[in-house]
Image (cartoon, rainbow, N blue to C red; front, side, top):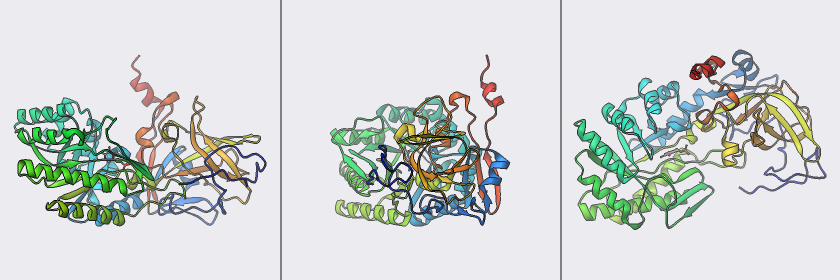
Length: 463
Ligand SMILES: *Cc1c(COP(=O)(O)O)cnc(C)c1O
């Protein structure tokens, strides 16, 4: 992703400020299908529509800001992942990206499994009817209550993250008279982010048990001796927003090496490996994500090759995409409140939300694009920063983008690719009311998560 300051900004042609922008797109009204949900288009009046419904109607009916989710796109992506991985592999949707009961029902209907990492996510999954055996329970510090509930309801697997947890889960399972299916999460010495991966000798982070120094082998040794556990495999998750398969290649090779060591030492071939999630999506036109079938083929080939080399039968593979399924399916719809040109710098466009509905820009320096959604415009492109209404100068939604220079209060703008880690990380900062999630499909929109009200805020404030 090489980005360079472009000297040809039409509005501020002499002094272009520092930033990550490239040249303005040739056509500001165009909606790049890479970053927008599949049914998004413009109607004959120029307004953005999704699932056959225009944003003006959505804003009138449901208000702004709002997350607008293309249900048929979500379902299509689930099917694409399930089809790509086929019968001999399992796809677990990572619920932390965005979870609601409607989402759980879609996953269930489309044949996906579900990762949860808290009691709250487990409750949501079970309440919406996801069979417990299709749920995996994750996390580096599950409470005793969470473990007890997961074992009691019979989740398909618990992914063990520490030596203490190996003992704890076994103890709880035994007390409940059960044998819990588990995987051990290992850190393989690979960290992948976006277009690069880094192979590190030691793992300075909180997740997993290191392969290095024989720790993971020791974890397997312990898990195999405990009566409360049925060890079904090894788990590895190497990062997020990954485009380069090289990190998975190294990760799979190291996990298979461990499987071979386990076979040599214990005479046991563990039947499963989980390669985690982290597959990247297009937030801007410069990102080029891979299709699920390419990812499935690449991962399948790597595992098959490594297992053949080690003389192992190929284990059942599972993957855990979160962002890659839900991320592209939603955009955030905002109304513009103020437009403030800063001479020689850029124009600040303030919207009726901000870091409370999208913390990713402030938290990770994430990149987004934006489009004028309620109409088209032939005005010249203008370099903008889309900011929220919070009391924080880092309250930025889109750091650098172009909007038509006639953008004005009352216009609706839309930020694409906000389906993952936006509503799920939303906050009540400044007593903001968290926006609703609208599911749109075949000309109908419905609220799947409603907007918070001031009564909701006061209900928790018990004085
Ligand atoms: C976060 C996470 C995922 C999903 O990551 P995405 O980037 O949303 O695909 C999958 N597995 C584990 C263990 C995770 O922590």
